[in-house]
Image (cartoon, rainbow, N blue to C red; front, side, top):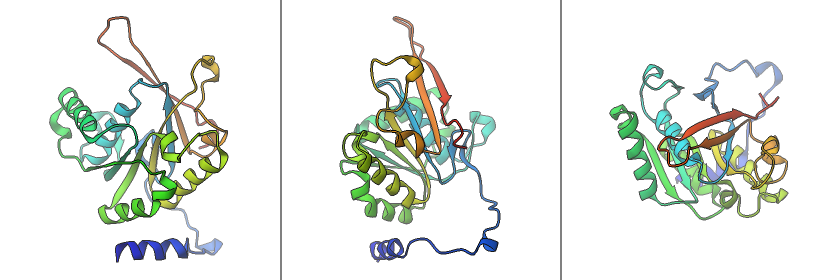
Length: 230
């Protein structure tokens, strides 16, 4: 019945609104300020092995945990999170989660994060994902990472557009983790792929991590690359 309802809603599409009826919405602007705009796609990209997945999990924990911004330094609208993992296994996520709780406080214990190991491109798996979102009242979807989730080379325009159309059909907040090309000048650091990886996300953040030789501290930088998107 649930799948049938999802398919029927998908076939009907969005309702038509008369211009006078389109009043200003009072809903929240951010799911996680100042990074994740509510009901919009966000892209977080950077070099491999820089800790992007750890940061995405940290954001997921903030969203799914009913704690105040005074405790974490972030303001989040609380809701369930669905983590779609194309890179690792549930045990890896669990270890990262335990490390974050150990380092930042046990107030993060009461979390509502659902995990799914994935291998099908999102565009071909969208009906099942939509059903999960409805069944578990998901507020935010994390996709780790873009190349496998879009089903091939991010330089492919059809694959890229299918990916973002699928995300739009979810009508909730999404965060896509992506990589950047190797061996290019720092001033030209962009997400790997065609121009739509820049134009389609509502928010874009470049993730940079540095560490001194033999050091035990990782310095993180998150740079807003959205330009005039917002």
